[in-house]
Image (cartoon, rainbow, N blue to C red; front, side, top):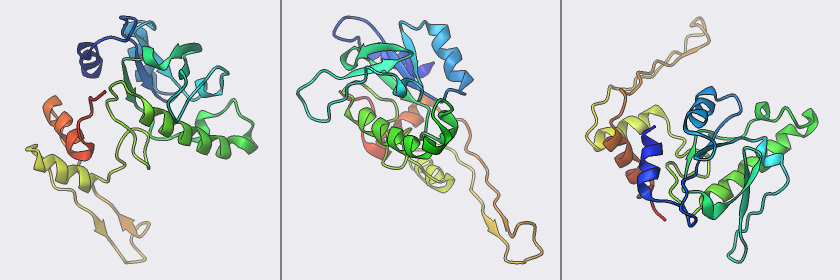
Length: 201
């Protein structure tokens, strides 16, 4: 909800409307609930199934009007006022509408396409993709803990214990303590430290 308010405060599209796109798994009930609660004319859900619908136009270089298919309807990219990505990558589990023998290939192609599309957007994107993750940095807990500590958040140590004894269950035990819930200001600062200002046109 904070992201929705932030995008609304950032302004409207060229037509004066607000359309926030949530890129998420088809199984992400939380994302569906969010979109439904705000109204599909204001918050739209983009899933991998939409990527299989005719109508997409994406221009890597300037010169054309890009169009996305979101929730089954064509939307000019310039009408999008903000994007939140909840999908780290496209997996074969998202592609039940694709024949099984083609799912691995299609998943890789869709991931590459979304990386290009998200990177090219001129509207604010809450968590711009990285080369290894569509929803931002693919960091280990230790990396998050270090950066969070640098911006003043209280964090708990992240512990790892590796056992070499063959009798030890599975040979490896990894024990992690998760970070406490971040404040909004700290979360924004984390994004800035990772890759500069996140809300830029």
